Length: 120
Image (cartoon, rainbow, N blue to C red; front, side, top):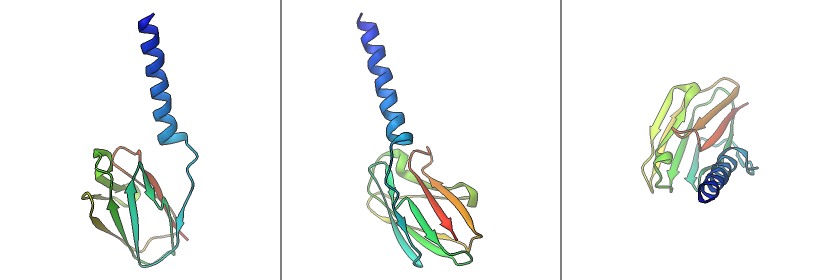
C-alpha cells in the first residue's frame, strides 16, 4: 500500500513539473524595439518572453539574472549560435546582429526558460 502511495505521489509531482514548465498558460509579454532592452530572468521565466524588433537592425539585450538556480545560468539562441553565461544579480549584455525576418527562440541550457525574438 505504501509503495502505491509513493508511486502516485511521484506521478503527481512529475505532472506538476510538466504543467509548470511546458503546459501552463503563461501570459505573453512583448517588448517592442529599442536599441537596448533588459530581460529579467527569474521565477522560471524570461520577462518579457517575447521581444519584437525590426529586421536589419542590431540589438543589445541585457539579461538580468535574479534566479540562482543552475538552469538559469545560460541563455542560448540556438538558431544564431549564440550562448552567454549569466551572472547572478547582474546584467549580462548579449549583442545580436541585424537579423532577417523570422522567429528566433532563446532558452536556458535545459530549455525550461523559453522566449522568442520576433524579427519583423
